[in-house]
Length: 319
Image (cartoon, rainbow, N blue to C red; front, side, top):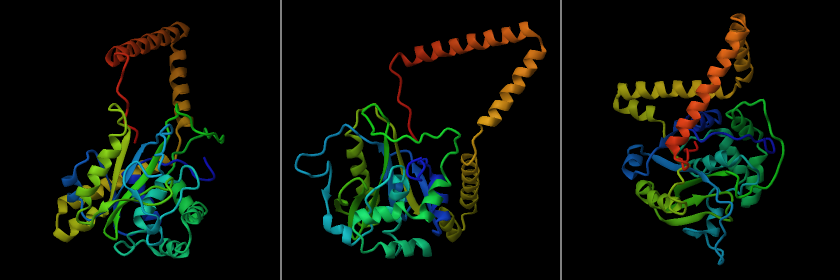
């Protein structure tokens, strides 16, 4: 927990229902497993993408004050919604809002978010970030999707090079320009001209260049597209099969989100106690033999895993 904001997952179901709970209509997220402009186009209309990556804590900024890619557009902050990130753990929801609140002419964002945007319209980026961080509505909805855990670390410390620190940023076309909106940067970053129709083809090379700045074995990235609710399109064209699939997907997301609100430490403990009690009823020798057999299997699996990894295993995808 950090300043009242908990960590949430980069997950299409989490972000979709987070929007629903904020009062947004007919919008969802889709996970992209490849940087494929054609697939992204098939999801049109695409309002923007949210990119999760391991934050390079050791990366040094350019000496001339320019970003690693693109150009700072300081004047753009007066014409679009851009907020500085002023608190930890809020960057996922902040990235989501960076797309959403710049599309309120295309998306029904709901009364409360529209009021929030209007209230912060004349604020500089730092004050917008503070207003976002202090919004009880946004914070409470955000926290409702955090994983429940009985173990909460309240300590605060500066991240080191050995820590795995992840960060969310947004890419979206606004006023004919492809922008990167990152609350840790001093201004929106422009990546050239782009209409909404051109966005799939224009954003993929930008994402590829960012990924190329990492070692070849770094695969801990996640990409989510903010699109129109796919059920709406299915109803418009009368595709009942697609509509059924999308409804089933929503049901699965709701179930997973419900599981996130619970921790199962107590349940697992009770199950373990029950299993041990059954073994003890068989007698002390049977219990000891069961323990030794479990240790043997664990050692065997560890050895097999070590052989497969060859001492230099693949890095798991962080999602």
